[in-house]
Length: 148
Picture 1 (tube, rainbow, N blue to C red):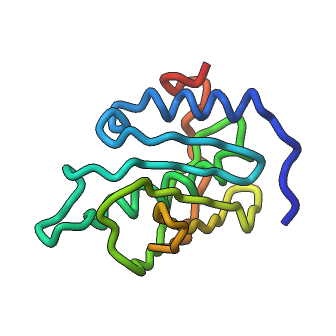
Picture 2 (cartoon, rainbow, N blue to C red; picture 1 turned 60 degrees about the horizontal axis):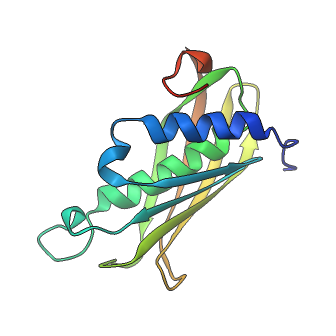
């Protein structure tokens, strides 16, 4: 699948909207969007740990889903897309450093998008991977907080 032409204004608006989402005050992620791609970095924090001393699976999901979502959203500039399914594979535990999720849009039709993402630890080892399916919604992007 060939990527869309770069629409850097759209990408920067999406990045600002993401940064302004209240949930991201907790996780402190950094998002970069390109044509059909997204990269997300989340610093590992002790508050993310389960009782076994490594980060909880919800952190893996957030990083992978957010990156795959924005790889899909990068090619839709009028409405918000929604995650309708996501498959996640846990490969190894993480206890420190920064997680980096890298996603790429693999399929698109008029309404449906499929994107894959890989999650890397600070040593660039693959710690998880996932694939999401996304659909166009009725929510206009210009109504999102921060999409300005």
